[in-house]
Length: 176
Image 1 (spheres, rainbow, N blue to C red):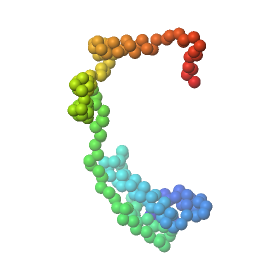
Image 2: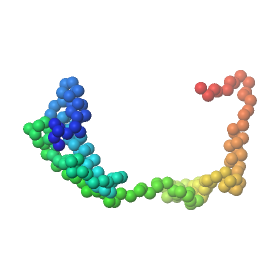
Image 3: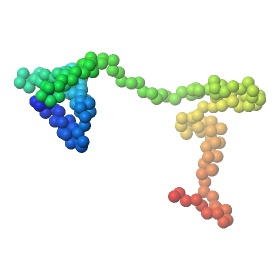
């Protein structure tokens, strides 16, 4: 792309000239190359009807030929870049599947017996560890109220939230 005839690089040119001290040639080239790659990718997307929202034929007077070789200055220095090749359009794009499980199963996902070795435990502790895998956590209050153990646990939790008087000589803790 010729910077003298193309207004697309004016922003990069201004960015380079505003620096104090002026950047070296490699940094200038990197900035220009990045902008050229951005323009080339935008051009590639607009040339491909699959990625365009609206496609219309160009009038011959408004056609622009985009070179894959960026030119610095007035053609005095040409830098070729192997990364400027146009890549083919990806046809394998799919919508990712949701990573959550819409319905929680009643089955325990990770049973304790898969991760805990109980060969050194006493019989009572073995039965306790095996029982942990059989406990299912309810999904709603209605489910919890059907199980007497969950109902008792909920009542105990509600009782712990009740307000009580402070013992003599003690002050309540503030929220700040």
